[in-house]
Length: 398
Image (cartoon, rainbow, N blue to C red; front, side, top):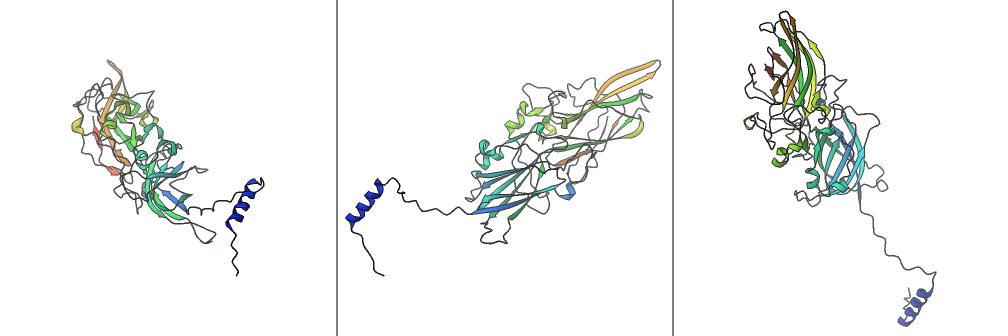
């Protein structure tokens, strides 16, 4: 082929003519190839052993999934210092609540990813709230965002996303990542109460439970998990990272300090007011009520049972408000009395099942303060179980 070289002066004339021609188009920059994209299907679930009904199914749905938000961070640098940049997020609400699992598919960039899944929380604008993983994991979720049918759950997984192009490979499917989610809250379940006045001066009295509530409840929980939950079961040693000492010790982050705050505490902390009647002859009442609170790391040895200013962290306590009535001349009694029971250190995604509380005498006149040595109160040896099994030896006597 004969090569034709245009003299330099001629080339300049051509260029000049083009610049004077209003209809001429400037040469376009070469089109850059699009960054490779990936597709990711996230399978979100609660292990089957954790989805058995823990209480009245009509009121508590502790495994229900109402919404999902998947948040993806770019982990290509692999630094593990929290600097991973937020890449994308995806929010999904199923048409009807899912019983214990749901799947979502979203587009991502390729490369190593850290994937967080948040269940049952209102959609968050994480792009505005946090630019990287460290800020995301330090976020505090409030207990008020939970309800008996909408418990906030969080899971975490890692994956390396490969290029996804159905035009090149019609049979290609999105990569799959399975993530178990864990409840941020702990469940305190009151299974039964026994009133036995047969051997006391209250013999013949009737009793009515008029309120059940948790007080001294931690109101915030960190978003961060200390590992990922991609495993055969959720019981893989993964836990929510504890609050900082500052967050845990700040009174603003607690609900119902010293006594129950009727107007300012989340519904998950109480049944108040309530009316529960039963016998006082030593027969057990079946209560089966559940309450939810965030982890409380206060040790028994650190709780002086004394009100202090400023606030000092203390044990979360279960309190029963009881109306005792006796109409047996010449004995007359109609009195509201309170029974308070210390709970152990509380952890996320654990069940603290109080199998039975036995009451044989009057309690306190009010629930504004606690005393370390209440007459007749026995502190039990307590064991803790994960959500997939009940604690069988958490019993109290007053």
